[in-house]
Image (cartoon, rainbow, N blue to C red; front, side):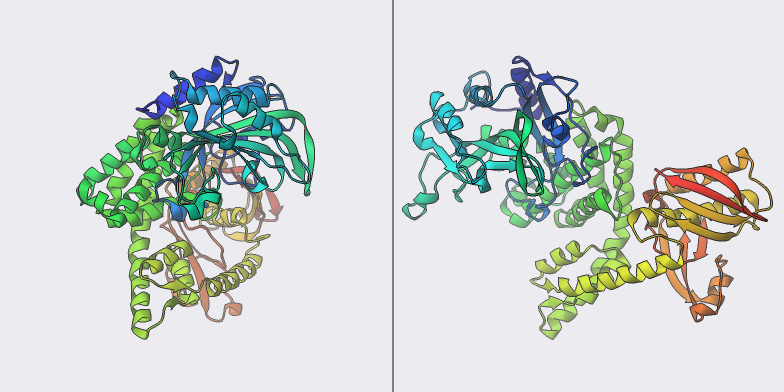
Length: 602
């Protein structure tokens, strides 16, 4: 088998092979899907091409080849073992109603075995094909094509839908596939495992799946499978795992895809390489740091412009960064040094993904901000959790109460996953059912507060707009004067409407100054903090709000740094950087002495 010295070597070899066979080379799509709201990130090479499987015409033609960046975090707890990654690259070639099984299988076989390609011994190849179901017959055609290329009959295995039917989700394009495996050992499993010593079934790591050719010919809607307008081919080869098998590496972390990152982190840590290799805990920590850094760099460097946050893709990114920061302690690496190692990732991948170079400054700045934010959170949260675990051990218990887990989330921003993970390291479980009940009560309280605050709901979007009204209020008072006080608001997922006292229409210059102030405060990424205090204390600190008897002497106050201090029922974001781009779209009268602003966040 050919030894691969760099990821670029395999990318180039793959692209050149298929370009010579009439395929247009297309760029990697964004990690943030443009057309598929059902997923937070592009999780497979086929995601960006779904419209073309359904019949749309691709501008580059009917034969395509690419390498695609992908993120999957459903197995994040498995990261640290030899194969699991949160970011990976997929090599893929595509036929949109052009060639079908014969050319697809023939070219895959050729690329795998040719001396100037991957040079894999043909006798080590095994394949699986679709065994059929009630809707689609057994794929005898693919099996016959493999036999015609010299694959022995006993190396061709028919497997059911569970193994050889591919779909991006419960609905959409789908079809039977044929998977290609490399026999890593050439040795049969013990007699008691002989029946399952087959590709796709063997649990003893004998077989390695190197490629998957999907014959995307159906569309599943409402549980019904119908033929697509044309027959398509969708193939996928994982770059990191393929390099591992070609180079004889025991893990994906021992390949050129990770070597420079790992070397840099080891050089900044407290343990020599030989000690890390001999200690499973240190090895796992190093792999997690390397994987999460690479993934975070790619998410931050993507044109989708995801930033750490509390919802959606932003939450996934925040979890990756914060999880890695926690593991820096295991390896004795300063969190700031972990952040600085992002430069190594950009240098490694910048030629293949130039957006990383273009966004280098943003990548490093966002990583540093999130790391610094979490430094305080983790110190306080870990101390509280350690105390709770010590009390639990002293009492002989083995399950952390759900209200403690929720307090860690609500007070310190500690995600439930962190609490579960840290508790597990001490052999302690967490009452996650009780946590979720507490969380549900919290959501209900937030909805009630939202109703008092002019919000249509407590969604992420409405919460962002609600916080933005505080910045708008502060900016209006700074530009127009202290008489500009809130007279009402109405907030939806799509816009904010804010009424305030002012005797005349705002000038274009005043509107521009207010916009600029709000945008600058968003750019400062100011922390939003919350406290409950007596009305008199809130007044003495300068909080703005309508204080009356219905609040029973205490008020809820939100502070945005030195910019805003207001009585409010919530909910709010944790940091102004989560708000996005602020724009005033209209300023008008709302009554005598009252003006109204409509604004949007992008």
